[in-house]
View 1: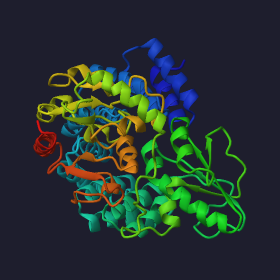
View 2: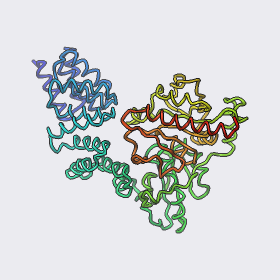
View 3: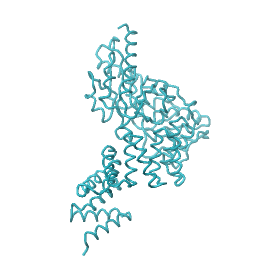
View 4: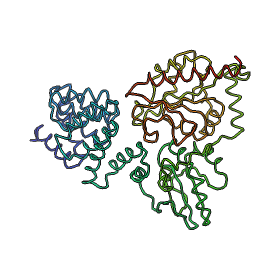
Length: 496
């Protein structure tokens, strides 16, 4: 007769052997007979996490903890599942409990460090990860996480030592190459950064284009990251077309439907623009858009920064001018409404760093209180629902009838200034030469470099940086003071 212990041992053996279906069935049978069996609850939750069902993992492990709250391992696995589910606050609390019960759990130490890193608590994160690295020297995941935190603390030599240690054992580990490349790029060492950055994408059957004349070949340029990345690096498309044309070659640019009208208008006949399909069009060579700086050997001094290289259709500009005037009433037509300023306060909530790059709406109060300014919201996505919560007299929604980025470009052509966090909007405005203020977290994306208030990528851009992690009040307060002075100058120039 099979006992509960035998059944649990059999399920665990299947689990350890990678027989996930058999293990799941075994745990289910145990829980059908004894729904509060803590080991089955715990391990079935671990299995759920390993197979990507994080919600089920959190429920199952949470119930195991309810049954047996003094066991360290379930707390650690719960914290890891919460961290994977991008719930770092809850993960940090669970992992703190796990480490109180067992301070020498390497996985919990590492997960705690990673959770604190997501919360921008960099110094604390580094201390936990350093403990994990000393507990298990040479552990690749721990070294990778520690190196990433050290990089964000600007301890670049120590960070590179961590990444080099990982790559010494696993030379093809793409995460280590990418993490090291980001450190090079943010410091302005673009040549070294571009090389490491090549580890981000899977290779096509066709060979990659490396910048040399293509000998009558068809070169396919394609998106490999987000909308903002595509708009930043599509500046190279006409340069590729010039090189290809010398030998009778041609260039195809494959892009997302939301970018099609904008890109199709930008390059005339020199680049054929297509909407991305399930299969790429016929081509001889290919190049991801974000690999073009490497192909051209770009460094800080040779960034092609002539703007505008993207522009809206004049008919769209006229149509949106009328729509915005309807929102304003007659004030803006007569010049009495003051500056028209576009506002974006949040990015994509699914972005791994969104909690650090998006501004809480309450923090915008000093900016929205500046007199002589009419704010219009260019916010899209989930955060658009926060529009009624913005402090002040109300910010008008400008994106209700936006169809694509060509429409957004037409709106940008009708404003005096854009104030935004790090989203695709900053790249569109920068590519158009629209005056733009970018509000940045303490640890910025690599393309904004370190400390400087300008960007070599976009001449019309001004950067406002957090002096310390999470300090949006200083960023917004500084931007508000500069905006107030600019609004006063505009009012004087208009004779108001």
